[in-house]
Amino acid sequence: MVRSRRSVRWTLALLTAASTLHTSSAQEPPIRYEHRVAVSTTSLDREADVEASLERNVNRLGAAGFEVTAIAGGSGSVLDKLLDRKAYVAGLVDHAGQVFVVMSRPAGRPARPREYRLLHTRTPRGTDAIVAEFGQDYRLVATSTEGGIFHAAFERSSSGAPAEYRVLANRGRTDWMAQMQNDPALMARVTRVAPMGLDHALVELGSAVSSPGEIEWMSSQAFRFTGQESALQARANAGFHVQTVRVRGNELDTLLLKPAGWSGTAATYDLDDGPWGMPCSRGRIAGADVFTDGDTYCAAENPGGGVSNRGLDLRVRSESTAGGRLLFDAPSCGTRARLGSSRLAFARIAVATQLERELNRKCEPGYRATRVLAGADASGTMRLSVFTSNQPETASAGGSHPADAPLLLPDRDELGDGSNRQLEEELNAAIARNGDIGDAEVWVEVTGAGARRTVRLAGCATTRLDKDQAERALRTLLVRTAAAEASVRNDIIVDIWR
Image (tube, rainbow, N blue to C red; front, side):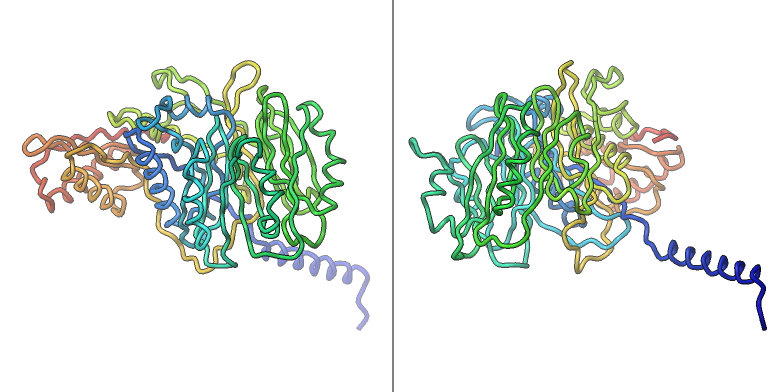
């Protein structure tokens, strides 16, 4: 049978449509990442307490499958204001561990649990012994510097050969880099270097190889930064990789390392600068810093590859409806509930919760935050410049669908308050597991003792019904405790727009 041309055209059209439908249905939508922001939640000021609280909160989120992707850096004075950090007093007050740690996991997908060790330091003193413990089981995954403070996150890893970490500090007239260059055994093992300050650096070492590494700085005035691209590419062709980009006065320094045993394809680099998240739209961000005028300077590796970046400009402003507190947006129901607490750490938690809300609202599907830089522009406007990237997360093999991540709540570190601390932790854990309170976000705060013990129910609910249901759930839980006679105060805010 001979078909007409019209019939053939219809057949081809149907086949094309069917093929298109099959192709589009087979393509999975990009992964959407959910973000959480961890901060230290202690009311104490000592270094050990502040840092232990932050690490504990990071690991609670890590157990729920969240990966550390960025530690806030940039302007220390901006972070001082956002986090209410106190001035450093040796032995008494050290808020170096008060910093935003940004974490993410793929929404609705399996994610393996993760475990971290964190480092926050102002000087090299004592840090070499600390990092020496990490090499067998942990790998360096994130660093940042701000206001003379160096931050680092090490993630537990069972894959790959063990690494060794050392801290090298200036000695007399010999700086840390010269010490590296004068040590052939070290240069035969070097794989990564992270400057911790002007006078010390963190060095990652692998197995010894016959071809030693090389290290050098490239420096220029800020306005000549992008003009160094050809000189940088010449060094990249010889095997060098960008380790960091940092602001030093009116200069920009770029640290270059040729790893020991390097062989393979040379990297390509794009140097760029601009306001907030405009520069370095393609390639892996190998180094970035914020200048005194608020502009961001960055080096992107292999911009012709598949990695692309987006920028977020998160401006900070004084909110009159929140008592003049610096926030990223008008206070939501959750922000008002946290600021309404007498617990000092809730103010810090409120800012962290606002930051994660901004990230979750503004990050495009397939993108997650990988760099966070605090800065202020020429007009004095404070902001966080955030790089987001579609670079895949590190392997999540062996993961399962994780449970909901815990709420960030203040530590109960008041002296002599052990019974209330335990009761509060048990009640908050039970309420988090309760599925009968709708979509309310609630927590409890326990004060007083004996007949004067009060359990305050706080948070946000969309309806009055959810608020009442949360109180009924709390009273049911209290009956099973030694605080059954405690009075209950329901301060949950009802807000349909929460």
